[in-house]
Image (cartoon, rainbow over all chains, first blue to last red; front, top):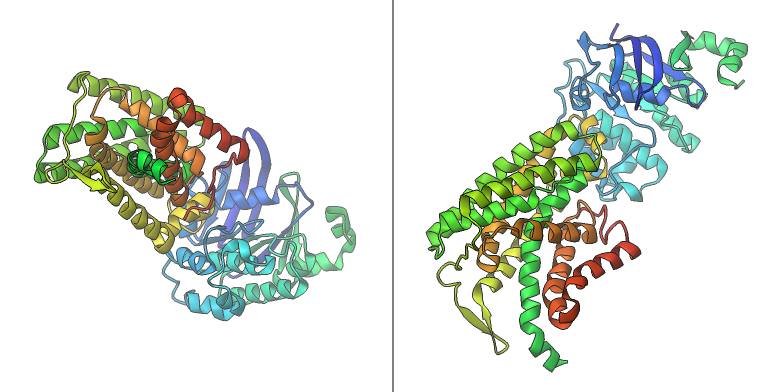
Length: 238
Length: 293
């Protein structure tokens, strides 16, 4: 297994949000983490990225223990983060976002072409046109492209995305789905936290559903789609 | 108008000189507070340390060599002091401003007491270096050459800082850290190193300001608290973590301290905090909050 999370507990200011999360991910695999609002999906993302300190449990990535490490160490171990709400630096231009993200870029693994600014502009031509604009002047879709490009430019082995489709037009969501599928082909693992089942189903071959701070159901995406009753019970959607 | 200008020209120039000095002092305070959310009340003590370095190393009547040596020593001491302060405040990273204020105020008091024990309670006046210790005629008014030079140094430093912060990758790291430091760490940059570097550089600038301010204020006990309060007001007025805000705030406070006191002599001690109160009511986040450039 490339990523193995065991009995991970975590929370903010004395309250426990994650009460023992278990999940695993193969190299180049994609897992969708689903669940209603408030079940701890974003806390899971923040804990995996090191922005919230885990209380107990382990996060092993490519054989390295990441639990308890600083966020910059985790990023340099090959974990790229696309956070909820995109969180661009509002006083930096698109170009500066990209150059900054490439600053501590890891040497790419032998099998993969490394991410460069040119490659980002090929994947997202729109960003080339907007390179002089500040983060705050971009549309939601453009902001999301910058947020994804920022994670990719660190040359990650695992990309964690927290609701990338939030508030975006379907065409933009489709483009994001294409990029994520291309990443998988290169062997990059994808952990996708989503409300939008469309995107989750299009990208991921496995599904994990969270409730009350734990993963309560995991299965193959295909099985999940064939069983709308379970989906409805777990997510409150058809 | 021209009579008014003639009568107040010296006050205006004094205000500009004080403003430039305050900018050099306040920029470090503003960036550390804006970037790392660390309130450093020991900043004034570093300024005073720099002023004593100017007197001790440069001498009461410095030559150019001893004046420049004093600046060099001040830079080194400032870098070290900033590094130590950065390390000492690190455990309080996620604690309240009150905790940070107590720690750094405690450090400031200890440093002030040590300086007083080492250098006594007399005012240690320092001359400007040769060539700058005279005065020149500005629109018919005799004005100290050194203060004019201070305005020039301030302008050069402000331009340099602006270029550094707005045009370089170092500046992009600084602006990104002010905007969202968690995301800076999420692309693999260690926040602690950024904080250490900015703390050290800002403290070095504060110590340099101390040496440069020596010929104006003289090194004396209590100067640390005076300049700390001025620098805090500059930061509040200009907005946190912004070079432009620190510059504009410093120039405004410089004029208030000089021209304001000259025009409203009766209310001299109220002018500064009156201006602060007005800004806090109208724009509590400061004039340039979050602009960074």
